Length: 215
Image (cartoon, rainbow, N blue to C red; front, side, top):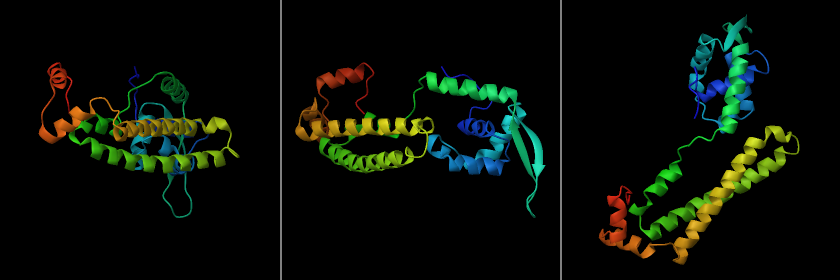
């Protein structure tokens, strides 16, 4: 189970990881995080950056160490990670790597109520999804291959994981689509009858009575 943390926004994790390299002011943090593509690896709301920085400072995980001014711009506060902040960063990463946590998926939500569609429409929509996924997968493979020629693998493992997840989703969608179009999906006829008439076969009605909803 995930620990309760003083600042649990994943942007805080990104900020701590940036400051573990060197002290920075918030504008630098945003530039570094964008350069490293952290907004692709975790949900980041850039508008909350200053709030996250303030919360990290409030809890002693980072501290202001300097102020700088460039040209006519306002002064900017430079922050550094503290000892407790570095310990929090390491502990947080250990948790994320070692402890699986359920993550909500819009696709899973759609699959859970797919019965409201006809089998034919579900197949058409899955075919659309598969076409997009296959293009994205080819793009991911190309970008990873290109990056791997210059970037050490240690800094690409998150991209390898996302590629593996994408490959698994393509395989799942392709298999499900094949069952629907090939007529081998279990209960396909009952599904079509339910969609056409609203009639619920006895075995499905029993599941619903036991608390397994049809849609």
